[in-house]
Image 1 (cartoon, one colour):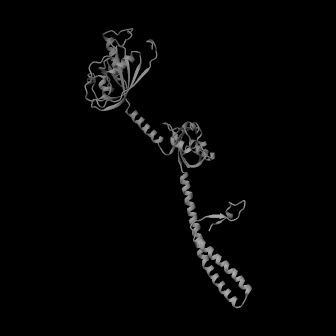
Image 2 (image 1 turned 180 degrees about the horizontal axis):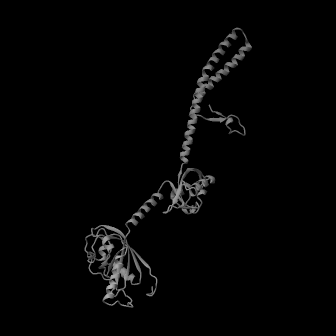
Image 3 (image 1 turned 45 degrees about the horizontal axis):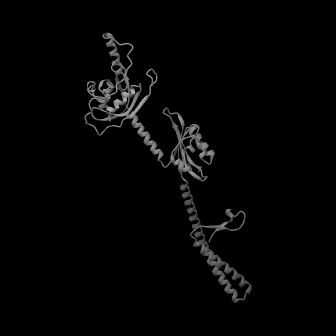
Length: 387
């Protein structure tokens, strides 16, 4: 980059903490690349002007929000502000006896060489590193480095404690991993009900291959009943209330399934509704199990009803059979052939009735068959018990 350019670029360096080298002596003098500095257009003279300049410099240094350390090109700390003493637990005098390598964990002489070479081209440097306090504890820091182009060029390190940011980032990362690995389908839609984020479980529920197939689609298109989907969207995005219910979904393959949906408002830091958050659980297996339970209960009730009917019909049928047999014997003695034939046929019918009642009483599964072979063969009126 030309020296007269008004723009600068930033070099980023990540330095892992050197937790295993605590107590090791630092190397001696650091060989660095000399930095060429354009001569100042005006030098501040001695006396009152110099004192005023030094006073302004010190006020500026102490007013910095970040911890600020001024070093020479070898990394020796020449000055620091009150924020630096607060962060690092050193006094200002103690700081002047250290080098920046004592502060930045895991750094070495090559770091200063790299900084000097890049800052020579008027680049800023941004370090992600851990800093070491006087008591040996560590804290994550974001360190911005630039050069002060005095007669003797100096390096200026601005240290910002990013512990809270790192904790927030770790929490967000943990929550993201939890959502990504959740067995429940989770989606986020904007105020137009267009999908912006989906987790892998939704792809499995709807049998899609990639998230791009769903991102940007209207969430209402996921359901068979668009009217119910519209009701859900209206409740969340218009009425700003939560919604929960079961909807019929349709997989990419065309297979239908039942999904339990819970939807609520997605709000920004100011409490404004910026969309909706939805969770989906496939309840098809549960619905089938519930239907099977209902069918079993119906069969149990039917069988109990049949058993009760057989019990109550059995006694009158026995009496009828006995009386018919007595009457038939009496007609034989009086030689009433016609009446005897009628009684014989009636007696055979009662035998058949007794056999049917016996079969009904021994039924252990409720099954039905068609009674007549008609066009309306599936109607309830054309179904009878299979015995």
